[in-house]
Image (tube, rainbow, N blue to C red):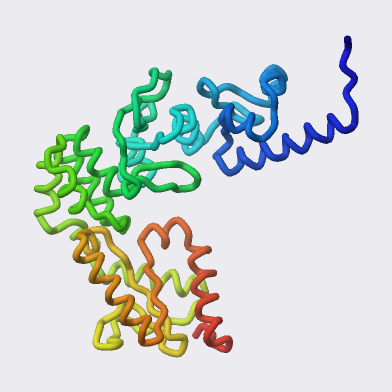
Length: 315
């Protein structure tokens, strides 16, 4: 019996396709079969879209939506989706995502919580990662910068590992769980000895002067049309990087090595609490914020400045 397509059928299909397109946009152009089923597509509807070229296979159970060409982020997203629940981008692929080093490897490295059948184009490693060693960047599950460096220590020679650690400092990457914390957590892991030597050298990122970071931030403020703050002034007995006194706003430039130990992390938060208790708002800005999201950062700082003093204008 021939099925007669009704207006309701077409409307329902159009709505689902809209949801699929929205999901694909948030996931760099790719979706997983299970996600399509959860949106309401049947197995037959998925096969129909594959047949007519609206979906294109990337890995088993993962499809590009509307086109075959994927960005690098699309390839990473597809590999993570294809590897199942708990999979995260890791090792050299994660290093490329954090801009620590480029990778020309044809296979995308992911870490999975348990063994899974090998898939073409994906290199899987098995490990159960604690929640504080994983983060999400632009919808992609990825190891944190510190965990990424720990993983790189198992696959890179010392000179390349040192360069990656240095690059993390240059980019001002950091997270609550520092590299020193991870070394203490995994003292017998392969590569930790070399990584500990690099950290103990104590001169990570030494070629990036504090003045250079300050000049970069001041240039950013000028480009954004924001008022110039006081630089390296003292507030509540503490020296802060930048302060707008009329708005009671402080900006601190966050670094990886300078804030790379648990003690330093706790000390920074104690400083923040003291300033906040005295009525100041504290914003921490990383090198990555300045380089990757300057417009968003500018809008956020402008909103903070205008919230306290609407008449504050750029010089």
